[in-house]
Every structure is written in structure tokens, then in C-alpha cells.
Length: 132
Ligand code: C2G
Image (cartoon, rainbow, N blue to C red):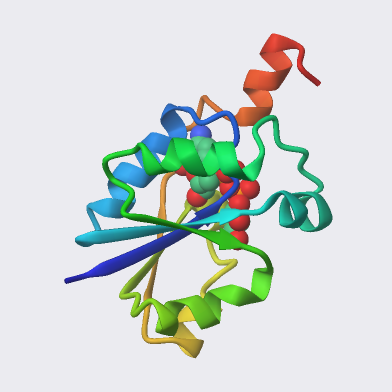
């Protein structure tokens, strides 16, 4: 069984996220999503989520491609998660291209960056709806 992991905030879940999760699952047989906690989002990414962690987790768990959702509480946890969950492939959108190459040096996982869905983003949705 090939196990895949990806990380993110996934606020105001949209089809760009779904495209990413579908292609991440295609990299293996089992997909774990490490979901940024509200604290991590605010402290480390200055993101204030519209939906809190519990609601974002509920939404992700309803997606057919997602097998398990775990919390992402810090930048450094990836190199621990990968051995702990026996991960074969680490996947991120290519807006992160290059940022996580170290993972191939520090773990047995392969790093894959997938093209983002260009025209949609949570920020754009908020701006369009004037939620800012
Ligand atoms: N994504 C995408 N296309 C979009 C928007 C997002 O492919 N139009 C991808 C991103 O590249 C990322 C995932 O969906 O791989 C989740 O996006 P965000 O929730 O914005 O995640 P981010 O804030 O980038 O957090 O430790 C890593 C961070 O937690 C990533």
C-alpha cells in the first residue's frame, strides 16, 4: 500500500483543493491530510480561517480521496510524520515548489509538487465576497 501525505489550511474548501487532493490520492492508495490548526494558521501563516479546525476537518473527512486527517501544529512536524505514518510520497501544490526538497534528504519519502489550479483561491473568494 502506497501512502501519501499532504499539508494545508483548506479554508473555504474549493475545487482547487479538490483537484489537489484527487491528484495526491492518485500518487498512491492511502491519503493523509495534515490540516493546519487554527493556532498554527494564525501564529505561523497569519491566516484567520473562516471555518475553524473542527469544521475544516469535517469537510475534508467527507471527501472520497481523503483517508485520514491529522493536525498540522508546526512546520517541523513533517520529518516526524513521514516515518511515523510510513509515508512513501509527500505532495504539495507547486506554489511550494522547492520549499520541501529537504524532505527527500531527511526521510525515505519522495517529494511531488503538483500544479495549482490557477484561477481559484480562498483569498480570491473572500475578496470577491468582500469578506475581508
Ligand atoms: N491549492 C491548489 N490550487 C489552488 C489552491 C490551493 O492546488 N487554487 C493547493 C495548495 O498548493 C496546497 C493545498 O491546495 O498544496 C492547500 O492549500 P492551502 O490551504 O492554501 O495550504 P497552505 O496555506 O499553502 O498550507 O506546511 C504546509 C502548509 O500547511 C501549506
